[in-house]
Length: 236
Image (tube, rainbow, N blue to C red):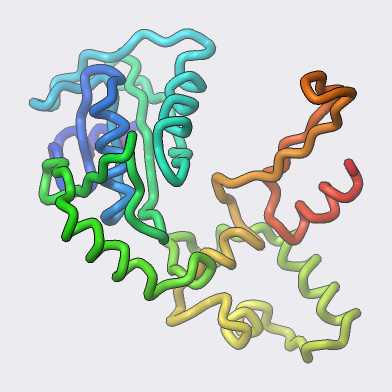
């Protein structure tokens, strides 16, 4: 990870990379711009020139930043985060994927990434992006994840359930079965594959309440969906 970040800093800002000295609203605008384009990474603690300054963090800093991003974006974005020590200085890396249903907004404003800059979208550009986006359904959208990254337990569980249901004749090649089912298209995983069998940044949040404002206990489930269903039902 450190070598990757050092190489990114050396290469400089681009269509998918932005440097920020500190967390601010411009970070959220850039995250939105990335999500409306090809995705990207924001390195916080690095000057535009590539000079590493680092940031100071507490135990709650990253979570507070993520909450601010989530609360001020529509649909809500949840970037992944990494803390990397580069030359003895702390750099926070936010990574966001391209969002399938566009455009994403920050406080009712829309942005997109062009070359190494973040631009505000015009009304016509917003409409065009929306129409283009609607040619894809959420679950059929292709993602960058690889088949080898999928949860093997989730795949085995799915295969076993399908065999027992007898609704579909399963082969001895689970990858080929997923191709036939349309979950893998053109040798690329779809969002459906990522949600059903892979690592994703979505969750099922279940709570048990004593009253309208008093919660007794809760559970946050981030497992692949084929496993999450049983976890949710067990909790309920």
